Length: 434
Image (cartoon, rainbow, N blue to C red; front, side, top):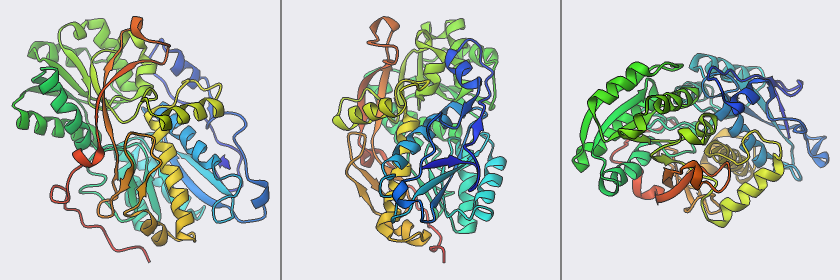
């Protein structure tokens, strides 16, 4: 398999933007990184004569979610590696990469270029929910297929769902329906103040948080909307402190979250209320450091889940990426892997490089070899992958078994138990592309 930025190009080199000080991880990435690292380009020798199947990867290598993008691409490459001996339909797979810059307008432009210039039929990637919505609209307009790998706004498989779009990770209804009841009923945290990243994903997290509060008798203590690329959180933190909640419930991600975690620590907010991240991304914890990791959180996946499939995936990651900046796979790696693997498998099941046939091969499909506790079911009516969501507690540095051991698993919900029903999410997808 070969990662490049054009069908005839060399591997794309990226530099990840960073504005948060004192983090070796971010400095290491910011020093300059090829898409994944040395030794990636590969096309199976037995299939060299065949025209490749091109997969367009629209993923952030700069902007607020650059490190997340790096980790999801590592997972995608691991999945592509599994097909390198025989190819897909007897043909090699080549991944053409575009940096979406964590910007919806840029992402749409890059997606159009992949479709119009490179003649790509299949797109995958993205981290920002707004980026996913933008790329999804392009895919639907052109009749291409887009697998959204790391976006969680409920709109992607809700009001902005499309026939040509599938979403791998849980949405925020699944997140808050798992995390919320635990916070209120088990942890006794009934008064919440919200920090909301001011775009699609953040809005979803707080919207579902409020629904949980209403159902379980909690109290909404207020909200601060946080613009993307915020670095100074002092005014927000002082406002939250004045509200005196039990929990500061945060739906903020990326470099912004790492900066927020530092300032929570500096202000000592964790001593006054429980810190809760509705969807805690491992990359952000790694960036901020163990001493700034507090509270109870929701997460999509964790390398410490004690089941054989996860242990094997972690071992495969370490073998494939022995010099990785993050020594374990993250939720973005897991989602990137599953998204790419299931796309390539669906092309095989379809028996041809045809978008409608591949969509039909995905719809209603059950994936038994999941890397969570439950199988994955791909719903045919909204294209949501249905699988587990987890609740974790931050470990004190003194309790960590190694430098990557940030969390203790508290509980989890099977996806089928917390996903929106068809009555709650009555979407109507467009006809199949012709």
